[in-house]
Amino acid sequence: MAIELYKHNEQAYLSALSLMNETGKAAVIHPTGTGKSYIAFKLAEQHTNAQIVWLSPSEYIFKTQLESLKRSNPDLELRNIKFITYSKLTLLSQQDIEELKCDFIILDEFHRCGAEKWGEGVQRLLAAYPNAKILGLSATNVRYLDNCRDMADELFDGNIASEITLGEAIVRGILPAPKYVTSVYSYQKELAKYEARVKSISEKPLRDANQKYLDALRRALENADGLSDIFAKHIENKNGKYIVFCANLEHLKEMQNSAKDWFAKIDKIPKMYTAYCDDPTTSKEFADFQADNSEHLKLLFCIDMFNEGIHLPNIDGVILFRPTVSPIIYKQQIGRALCTGSGKTPLIFDIVNNFDNLYSISSLKEEMLTAANFRFGGEGINVVENFKIYDEVRECREIFDALQTSLSAGWQQHYAAAKQYFEQNGNLNVPNKYKTKDGLSLGSWLTTQRRVRSGQVPGNLDNDRIKMLDEIGMIWQPENSWEIRYAKACEYLKQHGDVNIPQSYKTDDGIWLGKWLYEQKRICNKEKSGRMTAEQKQKISVLANSR
Image (cartoon, rainbow, N blue to C red; front, side, top):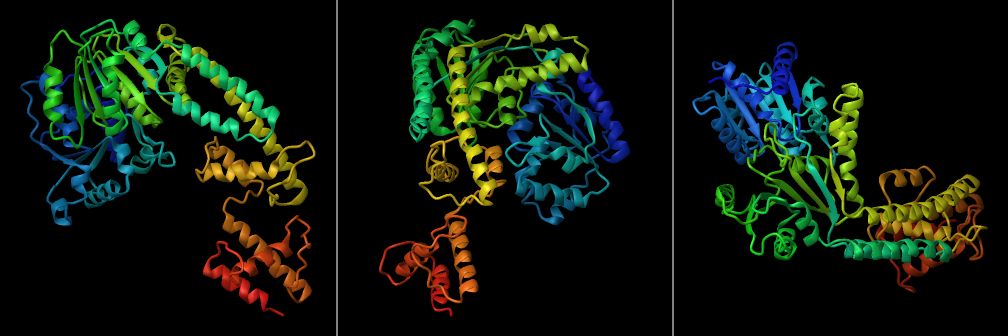
């Protein structure tokens, strides 16, 4: 029996064929769970005389894709596909590559080709077969943690045959709308981080205002339902199967140790399985999980195993115990609960330990609204309205918003003072004890920004704020400050013919140059302890003996 594609995949396949005939390359960007691997299988089925090299991040991904194909098309055999992992490709010699003799190249999860070593292997293959047609498949074309590189542009020159966002797929009915539950866990460390931020505020009125929000947030978190109550409230299928995503092995073990307490109101002895790439027992664990039809709750704890490319049938939902994570992985993980044609209403628990991550679902809902309002003229808006989000920490989130706004207001107030200083003085060489006329400790605040950026103290200093400070001459590194003072001393030498600078001498921009040079000489002469590089000592020695 021939492969029958879902309508959205059939349209993508025909568009990809057309683009490959015109340009030699085409990318398909469809969410996890929509069956996009079948597009490549259809290509192989309809081009039996062509040799196809199929590249993928892992053998396990390709194995599960073949198993899925076998279930739907048990009599179909595709003998024209040569499967290679991206990792193995990097190890192939030029002769090995030339022996592949490929007519088509499939780049599965093509956003992964942006990795340095894997990308080099792919480029060697593409260079060896300039006439081969290239088909790319991925849930995303953007590498968010790699300067937002667009791999559809880099690999396919922007030739996108079909692009469907996760939100659009839900609105169109390609994927089912989930029941989505948000909450937090292990919030103590997060609270401690904000306590340190509030404590570091030097101005008492600002510090007291933020402390009120912080105290209210702590009370709200303490009064919120615990995870055991939240799971008991929302898990209706008491013997269902759930994938539990963890950050790393230590995190996984921590979550498993807590699981019996968290799920005790559903099942006092839940069946727990473990799957991660470096574990030799993973295949058996996964097979046992799939085969388990017991009356117990079944939990598969995993790390980086089912983020991409793997179809998991008969899953009732996913539980995301996640610290900060990229948008790609977030959507891949919730996509594990969503599957074209499943007929279920999947359950997603988004349990975060980072207040900032409580807003991830907003991006998905925004995608859904965009699809309904702009792409389909309002059709499908009922899907958006029926998309249930159960916010178990709504009060906490609202208080956190107020705290963030309050903390940000303090930052903006100090930044305005720094900008004014820069406009008046032409630099940001602010003495550490300098205060504005309004009493703001500007020098101390600038020092704190440096320490936040270097990771010495907690704080909220994102790229936008760094850029704002750069625009007004922020000096981030102490060595830059040293070089500025050294340059001032050289300028003094040029003007006066010597560097006999009185310790009371201060430059027009507020640098106590005489005192600084005196201290540098003492360090050079070992009269005082201090940190100076050999190069700096040499510069001071030459400068001190100049006439």
